[in-house]
Length: 379
Ligand code: FES
Ligand SMILES: [Fe+2]
Image (cartoon, rainbow, N blue to C red; front, side, top):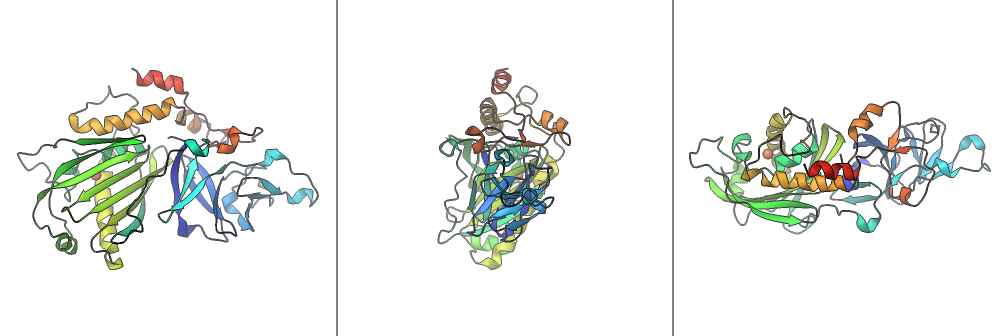
């Protein structure tokens, strides 16, 4: 799992004014709470007093109050009240808790889990169609027992559609099946490609009628990743009819991922058609999961020598190269150590304030050393 990226902590609508919300990401609990100005704050969930779970407390003014002894922490993670020392007691600076940058976008709460200063942070995946005339959005979420790297590799894999998805392919029944050439794209935060996919018409009768395509055809599709946990997938059943999907996969443990999906469509744009789009997406995602839950090893190998790659696997191979580069930056959590210490040592993902102040009570999570990872990548 990687720090120094934005992760979806939950839906905006679930962070209400008077009650903190617990969210698990990268193997840690976080507390989200909305202050009186409406701003969502995100802190490490561990109280620096006796390790209380802040999300089990309540929102008081602009603070979250620990349920154990009532200490209060503001959105910056500063402790502003310790009831046991009375009103005039001096609050030690060491009581502070990690506070993480938050942005609400696309109906979701994004949290930056890492310590990079603002100017160096990778951006959140852009959804240019969101809120635009002629487009309709749906949001959905599901939990999958899948490592996020396996999930992203699946997303950028043009060869699985034919066999895994009856919505997108023909189960290998066509003699002339072959993955067409991939028109590769690259950004600073990931790779993608466009290609022509031989696809049956949309299964849903209303969607099929609205798309105007009732026969199988080679259609334009594009897909790619942005960072270690986010995907974009464009499906154009006809040149005019477009489905643009944006997937934000939040690892909640090494092998469990909470997948948020925003689907933009430019047809059947009234709300009564949302349910059929959401249902189709769950159906397709469920097909992927039946394959992905049984992959060995659960975590993608850190070198490519223990799997065999074909031309259709170039996007997955490039994704792994990006991940290795982020490892070399020192952004990959040492999950073996983290899990070995679970229950005995409390850790936190380091927040940006750790770059400028010392004296933190909670240790930062162990990270894989960058130089070591670079050596592995060169093997
Ligand atoms: S454990 Fe949080 S106030 Fe004591
Ligand atoms: Fe798939």
